[in-house]
Amino acid sequence: MIVTGLLVAEVNVNTMCELGSGGVSLVSMAKRTLGTFGVRTACFSYLFIHYALLVAYVARSSDIITNALGIPLWESAALFSLAFGGLCYFGSQQVIGAVNGFLVFSIIASFTSLVVVASGNIQLSSLLETNFAAAPQSIPIIALSFVYQNVVPVLCTNLEGDLSKVRKAIVLGTAIPLVLFLVWDAVILGTIPGLAGSGTIADPLEQLRSSNGIVGPIVEAFSFLAIGTSYIGFVLGLSDFIADLLKLPSGQNKPLTYLVTLLPPLVLSLLDPEIFFKALDFAGTYGVLVLFGVFPAAMSWSERYSDELEAPVPPIVPGGKVTLSFVMGGALIVIFSEIFKDIMQLQGLH
Image (cartoon, rainbow, N blue to C red; front, top):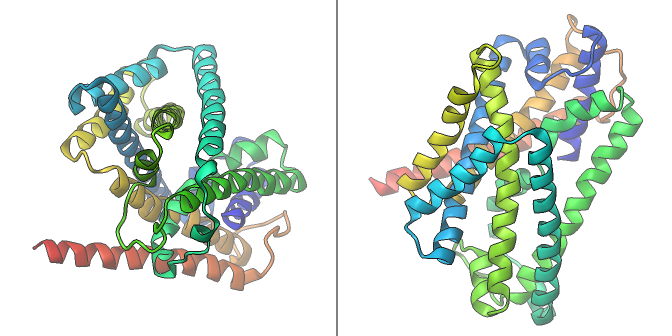
């Protein structure tokens, strides 16, 4: 994920140099390097990632609210969508920023409490258990967990195309969540015996909650807060993207774009209440690994080795065609293996 982030930065700065301006979007980069087909694929992947994740967020949050308040799932899903969607629609940047800041602070506090409480039951022997056969299934979720490439163009603009600063920001910015994920994984795997050897997909938060009564409320609070702040970001990003995509007049786009943004995830989450894990898997496989796995390497390949494009900035990712082939090939292997698995599952259902 660091490599693909650096490739996005490399193509972005070259595109900035060619166009003579900052604020270059992923769509502009795709159009310059991959043409019309690249733009269409990028737009579709962007929409797919956002809708899939919004479906997952609504499905999970409605479960949490239903467990807390004892109301039906459809009421919980509607309440969550109206509350956070309404904040995005009616709230000013200052209000949204203040609410989001409070949510982030609360996430850090609940995460710290969760790790401190749960780590008291860690068994070191559980951390030595392995299940290598299950590892490939985790790749889409890992890719989804480290998605940041969509903000690299903003990063490049803010740092005025200084690639040494961009490289440092990307590497350190990826290392911080990596450490947090490793701490969290150690707590989960060390607290729940036999999880690594299990052949079934289960929600580790549910198992952690059942193994420790104190953990339950903290888990629910942490999950809800994390979903809330992510939901806000994705709603704002998707509504702006849809407004730009539909070329709606300024000031007249809010009602329609927010309806198109909020309603489909709400409906889909209600049609299949168990869609949380499916949506995350689909977003990671068919969204992230396409747009931020295959695409950065393909754009860089076109830029570096096409006679029609200029690349004033030297490559910041070494290895040439070998590295680019490895990135594209690795992402495509995961994508096609998931397609094969999904086809086999569909045939099994019929």
